[in-house]
Length: 507
Image (cartoon, rainbow, N blue to C red; front, side, top):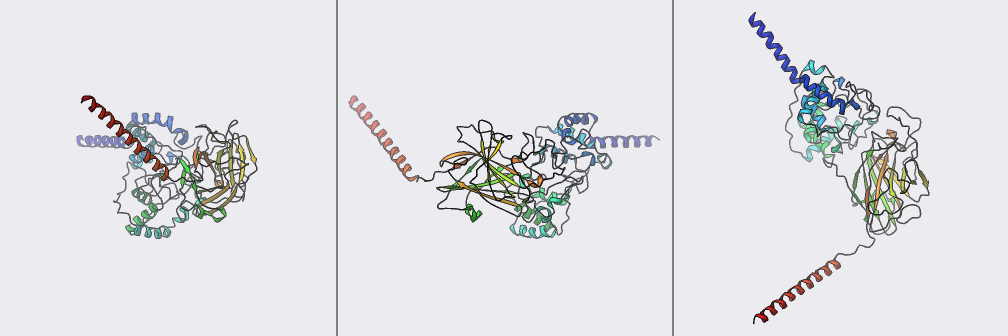
């Protein structure tokens, strides 16, 4: 009887301590609830079911913790995340979604929050603390492995969702939905800095073998193992860097002779590319909480008479039917899942101050203001024209006469739009060589129903227009060298005369 009592007490204590290791103490969960209610409930819901004010406006939709389904884990497909997995997701956030990183939380706060999140699903109690997969060491990257990886990429139908060049534009991409029938986009594999599971080769491997539960991304058991790393190497090779190389200045390049955008993108060969971050317009009504485009590339050339700008960005689909415009009205309660009657086309805009700016003062970047208007070069990509609008605020945008020419194309998930106009014009801003001009961009994703004030946009940047005559630095350098030499000789002569006078006085 005594032995049985000891056994029962041991089992009870073992269960209690094991549960504390998984679920934390009551005090820890209570502390986690305080943080959750203040910082997390607005999106994930007070009951962890994602029934919140933000759910209709955010994509990817906030996770419903009650489902026990988590995308980012170090565990097998279909299994729960580890405690450390939950902490990592909270601490690091989900790049380029509405889920921010929380580096300000201490490790203790992360523990408490993770313990409380587990209370929304009984699976954590039923299945205990799941073990992570064994992660092999990554072999060295090689071009041969990446080439083999392209074959594996095709054999496993990765391009059906991610596209031929990995830009997230595969034929299945527009139809993708998650476990809860919410639209979800395939990752753009060329932008490693946007990947939510991490950008290292080990992170890519982990994503392949564990999958992203609740999403259309399954787990893969690719054999032989060498092919797993070949696929990793190919996907890694699609991106240029782990970090976004965003620019702060757009520098135009002076070219000799005439150019014409009808010649296509070749006229921009060897011209520096500047990439700018695009964010959703969430300041005024018509808010785009989930913009379809997150960056745009720009290149500029000039000659003695003209300026040409080439814009490129990745898009899942080309919406070349329908209509778009900066004045289109968007209801305040416009949500992503509700259909609208009109077909919405893709569009892009370049914004300049209507008048030269003085110092650091610029018009309001949204669309100008009453005292400082902006010129909007607006290209509805269902049209063959580029319109000019003058904006004095989002409620005051008036179309003006335009002399801007346009050429556009879409291929393998990339829009290319070329705009050309004379440097000096009676229709809008004139560009003065040798000066900086503020510039901003807006992008409208028609598939995402972006129109009017619902759009992706950038802040103001500066575009430098170089002088039309490039002065050789040799002349100024020779002048500076000569002046320096003369100054040194004068200085030597001065001290020699001074020293000689002192010698004469002593004598």
